[in-house]
Amino acid sequence: MAKANNKLRVGIIGAGDIVKRRHLPGLTKHKEVEITAVSNSTYESADKFCKEYAPHATPILNWADLLALEDLDIVWIGTPPYMHSAIAVSALEAGKHVFCQARMSMDLMEAEEMAATAKRFPNLVTMVCPPPLGLKGDLLVKKLLAENYLGTPHHIRLQSFAAAYLDPEAPAHWRQRIELSGLNVLALGIYVEVLQRWLGNITGVYARGKILNPIRQGYEVIIPDMVTVLCTFEGGAEGVLEFGGVHPLPSGDRLEVYGDTGTMTYDFGNDVVQAGKEGDRALHTVEITPELEGGWQVEDDFIAAVKSKGKVRPRPDFEEGLRYMRVVQAVADSRDANEWVPIKT
Image (tube, rainbow, N blue to C red; front, side, top):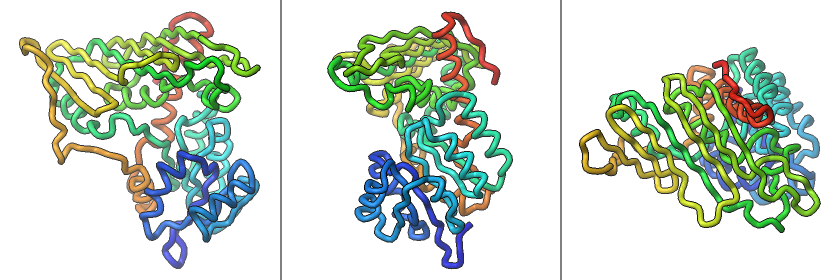
């Protein structure tokens, strides 16, 4: 916990663009937070990061040496998924609070180990980075569902298309490399987390995938360029989830929820919520009023939880991360076996 000078000391493992752009501004605004050590893919890149962003921090070659620092309170993991489990488990066992960049892990087995280790250390805070998608309208969606505006949801459609992997001549992105990204496919994991937060657990899937450009500069891609998932939710709703990275001029990411008395849509690119009841002439935009408007406060939430000494739980924690990794695993298993895969929740 915080030392005599009341500083919370943070060690960063994996100091790439996401940490620089998304997390560093939120961490450095907290005067009681001090970045004291950084380990990156090379010592030189860790040293460069320290000089540019954390001049008082120490660059460290091996992440295991960073975990061995006794006066460290927090380990901030910004590496690709293939390192998440080993670092998170080791950090917890070393008595550190752990923040883990999404996606949580390579596969379900690693996620289970991370969640089980977190349970062994209930006084330590764990958090998986939530997606920025849907944060602004999160409370409004929860309010509409809690007020039964739609009645009972029975049909859910989600579409997330991008053109990022359309160029067949481009090298494989690290998210297309299974040895770095594991079973994670496109935006599947982050949208499953959003859907389960709003609509409850997914209880089974049937998935199909396609690889449009399997050979990229000599590297054979086995992570699909597009995936379609049929699924069921614990409330009884059926879902169709579509993901793609090879779609020219894609329309924006969008969710549609149909209930027995009403409909709601969410435009993730513009954070526009529309809704309507049976008998209305059309859907209407539902204003996200100031008291309901959410936003990015990930670093604030994590630091507050650490300072509360376990009284406050940030979300999503490792247990909630495990919930979406169950679906990621089931989608991979379903694609492999070409059959329906039930999910134990």
